[in-house]
Image (cartoon, rainbow, N blue to C red; front, side):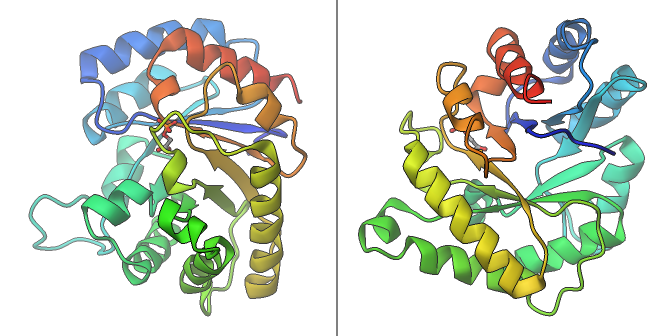
Length: 250
Ligand code: PGA
C-alpha cells in the first residue's frame, strides 16, 4: 500500500463507544472520498470489527492501540494480534508513552510485541519519546537511542514501511507542541540512529498536541512523514482538516 508523503494517524485512546465510533466514520468516509492516500484510525478494540466493515473499500484503515506479545494463551484480559487482524485491524500502535507509563511496559516487552505483530502481519507504529525531565537533563537523544536500540536489536527488517512515531512525552495531551526546530532535529536524529541500527530509512511521524492550527507547519518539515494525533482526532471537523492538509502534500 502506498501511504503518500504524509501519513495521518488518529489515536482515539479510550474514547468512543461503538455507536460513537460508527457515527464518526459515517461522517469521515464521504469527506475523504476523493483522497488518494489512506487515513489511519487506531480505535478501541470493540470498534475494530464494526468500523472495518464500514470502511471496507475505502481508504480508511482501522488499527489497534496495543496488543499482547503472546500468540494466544491464558492471559486474562489480553488481546492477540491474530484476533485484531481477523477483526480487520491492519496496523497496531506499540510502545505508546501511556502504555509505558500507566501499564509499565518496558522496551523489552515492546520489542516482543513488535515481533508478534510482524508475525501476525500487522503493520507496527513504534512510539518513542523522552520525558520532560530527560529532556531538561540533556538526555533526549540518549533516551531515543536506548528505545530504538532495544526495539531493533538483532531485528531483520523485511516489512514494507518502518514507521516510528516521535512523541515527546511532555507534548502529549498537554497543549505544548514541540517547536518545528525541535521536531526537525529529533527526527534527523531518529533517522540517523535507525539507519545505523538496522540500515532502514524510517518514516517518522510526529505526535504531541497536534491541532488543526499547527498541523500544517509541522507537516511542511521534510523529515516529518506524517502525524499521530490524539485529542484532535476525536472531533470530525478537526481531524478532517488535518487529513486534508496531509493529503495536499501528495
Ligand atoms: P495528543 O496525543 O495529540 O492528544 O497530544 C497524541 C498521542 O498520544 O498519540
